[in-house]
Image (cartoon, rainbow, N blue to C red):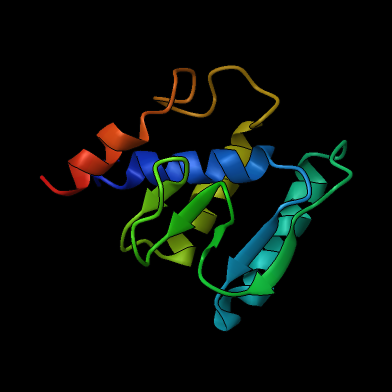
Amino acid sequence: MGDVRWQSLREAARRFLKAEGCVLQVSKPNIDNAHAVVQSIADRIPSRIDLPTIIEGELGVDGLFKIGGGEPTLEICWVPDGTYDEFEEQVLDLLEAGYPGCVGCAGPGAEGVWNEKARRANFST
């Protein structure tokens, strides 16, 4: 939690878990792990009908979040210099806690309005 990127990684994971039918882009070496995460979503959220699709690409989900790469618009949760393993850890932690069907289990910042501009300002300090 001491990592300045932690809250943004957590927000990216929350957005991913709430999105129906999104397309998760991951690098080729992470495709099998990403499919295992989708299976975990299916196991933990049995009501989910429209599971994420996995394709090869730059880590993220268009319109929701981007991990690494150049800085996107402020509507996108951005985690500079993040890795797939860090993202996966957050997703699995949230699933284990019962997210998104639980109250208060998503950690600090989950209940309030996300301020992407303020989060990005922390990356440069």
